[in-house]
Length: 124
Image (cartoon, rainbow, N blue to C red; front, top):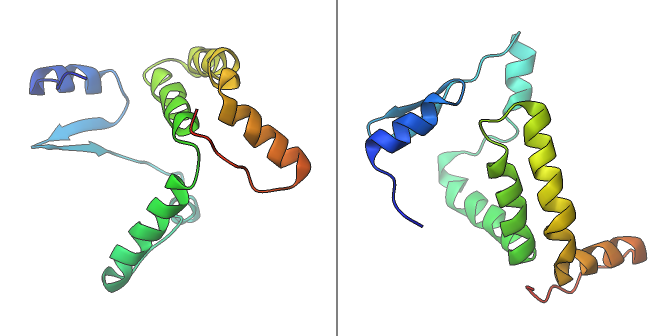
């Protein structure tokens, strides 16, 4: 994957609502109708002393899943960015139905769900 220039990053971000490049960081501005909605958006706060453990726990949860399935889910999400809701959903659905469904691990996940057991990922 090629690294984008700063100008290319700015061009891509200009297509997205409330995203901006600040130095070397990408920032997203969130706006909420009221305080409860803003608080509900934050799903977890971690004291700094516990941050490393919390991050490692999250990484362990994510990496316990099938790599190819996670890659395909990420592809589906990213493919819809910058599109209208309707077009983004259409694009994501196309990836899920025509690519994700073909993965062996996708089938294993469905079988495990139906059989109420933990999936045995093969990473393919």
